[in-house]
Image (cartoon, one colour):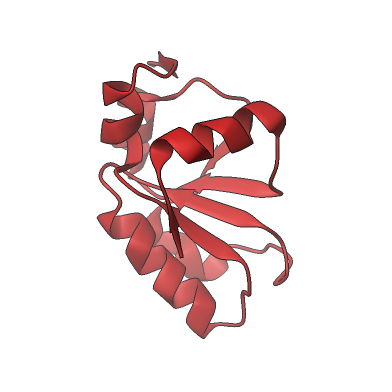
Length: 103
C-alpha cells in the first residue's frame, strides 16, 4: 500500500496513525527532515531490529520512496499487517512546501 505525500500530510496533522518511521541514513535525516514530532528515525539497514506492534498503523518514508518501499516489503514479510509507504519521500514533502527542519 502507498499513500501520496499530500494525503499523508493530512494524516500527520490529524495524528491519524501509530508510528511514522524515516528509514534514511543518519546523515540524511540530520540534513533535512519533516518538521514533525511524530517522525522517528530508524535506518533501513537496521529495520530488522525495529520493535513495534505487528498490528500498528505504520507509515514509512525515506528520500524518494524506494528505501521505504523496501522496508515495507520486509516488514510485511515479517508479520506486520498495516504498513504504508509514503510516495516520494522527503523530496515530495519538500516539493509540496510542507515544513522541514535541518540539523
